[in-house]
Length: 321
Image (tube, rainbow, N blue to C red; front, side, top):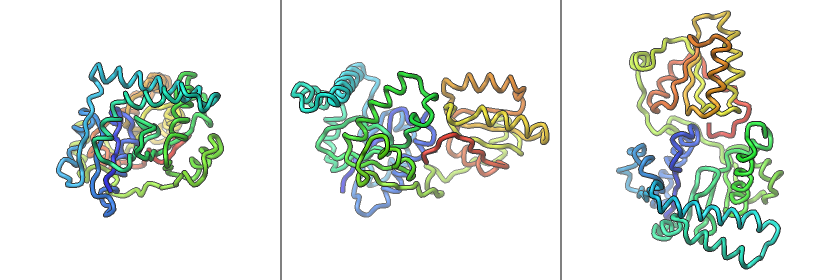
């Protein structure tokens, strides 16, 4: 079997989803049924996939999304498909809407790339595929539907965006993978998707889950990040549901009893980081909390191995991290 595998152009900032995607790719490479994998990605992400350069099963299909013409094609394609998605709920079978859908697919840059690739399946390890409606079966991984549980974490525009894109993901794909049973139940409950369309596939966490087996030694970490041992580690992007605020409040209490304990956080700094930063100053934790941002994977492994404790205070988690 020859399959396509999609690695999103902004996935490096997605934290656990990037790790999840690479972990799945490494597992697929071990399958005897899969003879070749075409990796669809961007030039920026390709630089971080050097491990796969010399894999005999791997071929790369690179799309430069920074091209002005490509941006226009994507914008128009997604606008038309979204229009079709919204209005088709109320007027199914409309010939004009079907025309919009077909035209949207035809101008999507991935349409020609998928056709040329000769793949028989397109595997997308994130919630939304870059293209729907081709003759090639699409599998996606639905990581969460947390907007139904914590709507306050999303503004109105974000909820609308997720509603439209979730609808496409649920009804325009051929198979949906989830990491845990509770996500499957959410999909069935909120979108009435047939149970047999959803497969629960818990990530087989192991040493192969990381893209590298290298580990940065403690002396290098200590010098690079100006940190000392006896620290707590929280590896997570600064989304509100990751619950950094409550963690900081807990650290304040711990710090009063164990004054030399520190908190080290890694992961992408989102817009919500400004709220977290304000809380750090409010609790007078400037000397006890450090946000390192996105760190190289070998550094993260080193931080894991040297920490006193890994803390996961997230309000909602779906398996990707």
